[in-house]
Length: 306
Image (tube, rainbow, N blue to C red):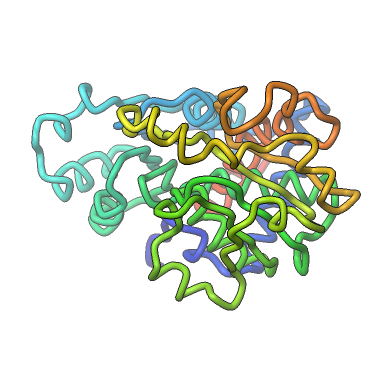
């Protein structure tokens, strides 16, 4: 059997993605009920971080621990990758010593190369192009609170970044319509707009984009590595702030999500995270359970049955 990887949502079928988010909900219930479930005793997760993180490291490391396994944290300064070793060589060696690998890095081509030469499953924990693990958590959160997102309308507000690109793939895989409200010059890549034109549209006016939406999502104006553009982006994105009044234009059952960390007073108003329609805290917690379900799915053949 060939090794399966999770580099974008397109690596799995819609049915498989649905299975994972429902399993994530079940795993959350089990953990909150203090149910001990440790199918990964003796298994090791290799965690390669070339970009720093809070939620990603905690959720993967805690998840592997709750499953009875262990996780090894490797920053770029801890590996030969940071000293110029070819990705192919590192992939062969690291994958020979662990059972599964997650990578948080810059270029998406790097993780694709690593996966090509890895003998174990590789998970994309964020690249400059995609952030599929966050979408698993977001979709799980929506399903928990509102049921199926199929046929719904989702509005993305802000930069056409890796999160936006992942929402575009999610629209295709989960069957919803995505409206993107982004400043001129910050829209998603044209090739992505063409690929997902059947389920994604650009809307120039933010207020119009929010009308009737069932989910409104945003992200920081300047992502990691773009700090030098902060002042320019702050001017260009000033009218793209998500506020409770913007949500008032959406569907009565609308939810708001943000992958965090959030900059209050910039992409969101100071009171947005405290709005009763905000689901960000459950969304953040669900990174743990969505990723546990993902690892369980990828390592099904190695699960120890009690």
